[in-house]
Image (cartoon, rainbow, N blue to C red; front, side):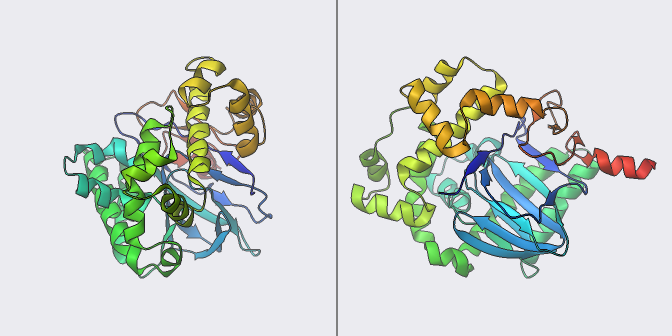
Length: 329
């Protein structure tokens, strides 16, 4: 199994969107030894260079101008081609908290969220003009922050999500893993895990939500998500627990129980399996790099955004400090 690391994002609760803008967000050329995952959606735009995107055991080539859309909890890593580092700008957001809960129509919510409920990326090249144009508009809004930019961004992300959904049947790489009908079939279980991860989650209950037998559900889930249902559940639990640890919201035992781990030993085993260290060791490692790897969210700039690799500092989620230093000297 590929080693995994969890990266924590402090999304503001009232406007759960942040951006990494500037020139310091690079993909390394060195060999990739691990992959990481987030608890929110990632949209990246390759500004320079080319390379390879790794998601689990799959690989996808990217080049300058490509847009990559990744769902929450999907392990991934990007590696630049040998000749130069590739640089990116990113948008991170929580679609459910941003606007999906405004829908009373179950079918509309399920259809819109399907694009971000699978384990394979959407890579939009130069031919996907609408997605490229909308993504650039979002970046422009965050650079300038004009009046009503948050409302504008909410609308852009909704359109972007719908465009991504439309791309699914046409994307050959995704079609190899699952058809759109299969993706939608699993959506109730994905949402249930996301909302009820702290409770006892049983496979028969998940299968019933999807109107499938447990055997068929396990087989289909593994085909679509590239992991067993319980492994996916534990990955979500570890991610949620990691967020709680960084926020300091309760002791380790309380966090473990509220995130679905019946004992401290099972909690520690899960951290060792997915992150390669104990919860305490993981928290200490992140805190050691707090100052050099801080990114501030838009609405709660006192809350840090932590990384496992030193890649620069951004202020107010807008422009990297290195970029400003270059301007000054």
